[in-house]
Image (cartoon, rainbow, N blue to C red; front, side):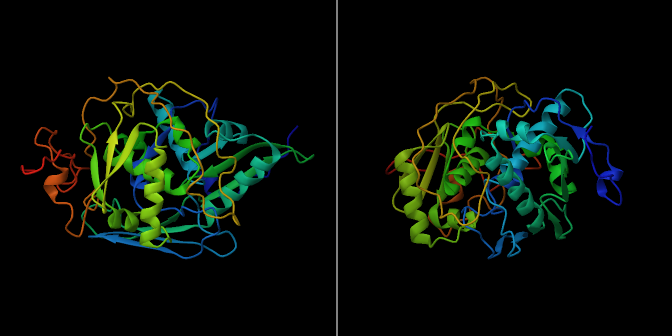
Length: 368
């Protein structure tokens, strides 16, 4: 018989638990998190805050010295949670911000090992997710407000008297949960994402998935703009060098990177590969990163990662991905709005921007 602490004076006492039955779900990511600087891209402990603003949209991320800022590897926990919620909603099941699961389910789904070390690292990730404080004006309608929250409101390890862990529970913030149950704010991602070992390449894949999608003409970014959007502590020149190292290896599943002139990065889909949020996705177990995020480890941006093959059917997306934000390609002048424009694209939706559109091919001596 297991022994668990009674849930008292807790947010969980007001929520029905969403019990994860199998943990088998297609990986999905929340759009707002995919290309804005919400996470540290280094495995070394970061306490310096992220302060990012584009127009009226602002993101501030603060860390406490004890735990450091949540990393992009810690964000796998949120990707897993979003995947479980969307999968359950697709099946007509009731979901909640209060998730109850086994660590084994989470670790297997994000390509981790399941030994004692990985369980310890998972608890460290949960601690950083809870300790990191976010302030943002994203999704505040026409009234500019700043919403403050942590990635996890509270969490608990459920153990027997002998110390054996039987399960875990955590409560997601309402801001994140609302962004997941709104289908227009969720995108599927390739399971091979979890095998990406570098922080910058993980972030870059999410940018590619968010902006380039399956659009044949891809997307064009100014390097300086990408550096600003990443929240990286690297110097701009070092960041640009990191991007060139990544482009030389081409590790992003489903995308190819190329440089135009010295200051522009083009992201092209290899082929139509990504399913819509409601589309069925064939599951593939992955291996790679052994830790969800640890402190005291040097920045991981260059470790070798074999190119990944696409896993997704070509017919699963019905239209181009035009859900980018107003600041998605705000450049100093190198990229004009026409560089990311397509007259054949679908009309904008309420989640699209007028300045963030698919890329037109450019011909020398001709019009853009």
